[in-house]
Image (cartoon, rainbow, N blue to C red; front, top):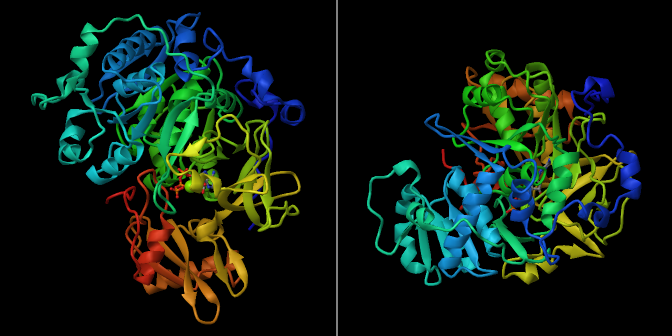
Length: 583
Ligand code: ATP
Ligand code: MG
């Protein structure tokens, strides 16, 4: 399928001078060691993300810059400067230390996007412990699974979420403390026996704290993966990841000193920590945190109100904005926006076309995983966009397409997307599952589990997850291509494509489709969509079957769960559904 290339902008058309206008040169001469000098480091030679993201700004000219503009669900507003963030995190670090939290302990966070989440996160790092963020919409079982698996020592939680999981606490013998954050006295209930009040402890805590010395290889964060393809795995990261967050914040998100940045991802997922905490703040950039969930008008309102300049979001959110209609953004002044990025799933070319039409800007796709810790492949502001492509590797990264044997294939050939190990934000292990970690490496490559191809110019094109690729009559078909063609049809809001076993063709392509409001799921429409897609794709690739469904099963981070579509289609067990979004 050919989509017109979006031409490379001229330097003078870009509102600021892009950080990565010398891509080709930098790729040739880049060294992480050199860039490492831009991090401060701890006295004595260690490295700690909390120092790089907060303390060093609090001690310098950015001390009074707003680090976080916070907007609550009830339109409350709060602002925190870097200096204030330092004081609060020093205090809470003292609280944690007082409770006996030590280097390497796992401290989990289970709360919505309130400022205290950000304070607690960096305080955990300051005491040298490992932070484990949990998505606030989890029910008791996923929380229990993760706290058991990680052998967590402390849980920091809000009262409503504490109530949700009160039954599981007795099953967690290693959990020593539950700290309850009751922001603005939102809850009137008394604390449960044994729980610790965040507010009370903070009122008594000293603001003097010295960061526990950590090395760049000490563990900082553990994140459970999204569970799109199977049971979530606990990917563990080291403090050195800060280096790559800083670098990719500049190169891929084009962050500049005076930007107002908004990342819509929740810190329960890796994007919400790497890019909703670390990347902006290691660069000393102000960011907006919005507690509320998705609503098109509320989101545009946030951009207008705070003058957001750089925006990082996900395809599923973009598809929802598209669904809300082109007229909605027209009601807001979005002129502050200058750069937009997307991650988490393939970005359908139609979404780029829509962005240009409705927002006057192109979304820049980039690729990475929980395991990679930071962006590895991206579209940059000063390069042309080839819609449907994830872009090119960041400087310092060697990405390739490899075959079964682990050898690089020729440009244009499909294979496994693989990365040469050793980048700073690479995961260091899967928690207590070294065997699974080791299984991800082959012939000197980290094998990502994604299928892709690379073109002659080094742009990478996502085909699908290895598990999702369809084998029909000898052709390998990636669901992304078929889904992208489907959502170009005006009636189609979302599409998920699977391979359905077939006695003749081995598998046939089956599509599940949800419709935009105002369209009826009739046979006539089905035929129309079928004809539309056949004209776009080779006959063997177009879906043989289309089934209408109200909504597609997705992870709570918004990814289409094709494995569930398939399990349901075949009447098989659904497997781990801890991250499944509820309707
Ligand atoms: P699990 O590993 O538990 O199945 P997951 O892979 O969805 O879940 P994440 O680490 O959150 O967990 O997601 C990373 C994956 O998301 C990538 O491997 C890729 O399949 C997909 N992805 C992320 N960004 C992009 C992108 N720009 N284009 C295509 N796919 C992407
Ligand atoms: Mg994965």
